[in-house]
Structures are given as C-alpha cells and as structure tokens.
Image (tube, rainbow, N blue to C red):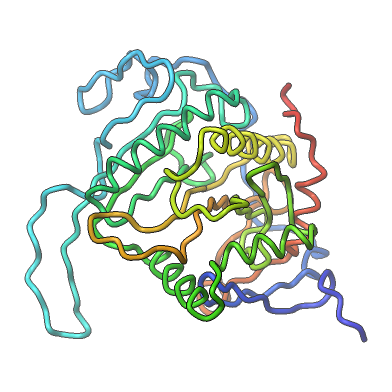
Length: 346
C-alpha cells in the first residue's frame, strides 16, 4: 500500500518546539455526537453604555474610558502581574522551586465601535493597531524580557468582553513557549547558518500547498506541524527579528494579510470566527542577547473544526500523551485559500 498523507495516520515534527504531532486524517469521516456551541452571528450594538471598553463608560475601577477615536491603551484593572512585588524566599529544594516575577498587563482597544472586528476594519484602522503594538513593544521592551501581545476573540476562546481589543502582558522572565522557541531557533542557526523560519518560509513558498494568502512582504500559511484545525502562521519574506523592525509599507501589507485571513476565517462557517492569536519575536529588555536566530511571526489558533458549532477539544490522549489532529495542514490550507476575500456580511 502506498502512503497517502490525506488518508493514513502519521507523525509530523515541529522544529520550533522539538515536538511531534499525531495526524489522523481518516477520523474526519466519523460522525459527531459530542458537544456543540451556540452560534453568535449578531455583532451586537455599535455602542453599549454598560461596556467598560466603550468610549465614555466608567470601568469597575472607577476610571472613565475616554472618548477615544482610534486605539486606546490602559493598564488592566485586574492584572496577572505587578510592577512592584516582594521576592519570595529562595529554596534549594529541587522539587519546590519558586521565583518572584514582575510585570504589567495592559488592554488595548482596537476601535471605538463594538460591532467591528479586524475582518471588518479598514486597512488604515488596522495599521493604527499595528503602530500601537509597536509603540507598546518599544516602551515595555526597555524594561521587560518578554512583551506578549495577544487577542482572544469570541466567547469560545474565553473572551469576556464583546469589543475589539487585545491584551499586552510584559514580564521579567522568558515564558515557556518563547523559551523553547529560542532554544530550537538558536540551535538551528548554529547548525545550518540560517534562521530556521527563513528557511521554512522559502520552502513553503516553493511548495505552495499550505499557503493561505501572501503579498509582497508577508505570507500566511497553515504550518506543516499545526495542532489546531485551522491554525495559521504569519511570516515575513525578509528577516525581521521584532515587530518594531517593520517598515511603514510593511505595516500596510501586514494589515492587508491580517484582514484577508480573518475574512476567510469568518467566511469558512459564516460566523465571527473565534481564535487566540499573538506575536512572537526576539526577547527584549536591557540584557537581551544576540537574537539573529529569531524571526518575527504571528500565530492564529482557532478552535473550530467541523462547523461554527463544533470545536476541537484538547483532551484524553492529547493531554496525557501527544497532541493530535484530524484534518491535515494541506487540507486546512486549501479550504481557507478557497474562501472569498470579501466578508460574507458585506
């Protein structure tokens, strides 16, 4: 029997994290009798006087959200980290290690109106978002080792506020995900003399089978090692280490691929597609080391699998042994690629 990646179980290696994923494409044929989710197709009102992220509304902290016109950034009223906190007592016990952390957590509103998303915003408005991200990275990166920009979109991904916004957490340490990526990218550069993700982009541009959309400066693809069904990466076509290295023109073309990707997501199941997304680049801070091995990239992790009401669950074998997916990366890329670049609501 000849191997067919669309039919036969196999493993794929993620060189960024040194992990394997089990791919089981034949499982897409099975019926689904498990949990479904409620579809939320209504974008809601443009302004909600009870929503603390809307202009002119008072937050629970008693602070008034100003009448902003573009983006607006403020310190989270309930931060996960604090800028000034005492250090815990040190321990020599290898089984009970504890270290202090310092950091800050901010919220950034993308737009004053609640009934829009990145998919429905103009290119200029998305460029404003990117510019604000860069400003935050440069400001916080002077002090903190890691600045994590991320967006949770949709109640399915734990978003508690229906308003276009993201969070920015800056911390005094290198978190697990970027720490692992730092190790593997550094090892690849030392071994092959080229940044791993630049080699990867070159291979994907030649293969064409996992690309969702691309333009002069950026490519969006379903990574070969993707875990989530419609997971994607946004990668530059030139070597960029951090977001603040992109040019003004690259901001516009990045905004374009972000808009096209999120439109395709929404068009897939005719719903406001939920996801968690974020950006990874070289670590920051006053003591950051040589970072030539790093390539700036974005990650979109949407949970939907079969429809607007059926999501992928990380459970059982995946929690206890190894991550697994049903739909192949190539199949997912093709389905996304075939979606219209015009939003279904327009």
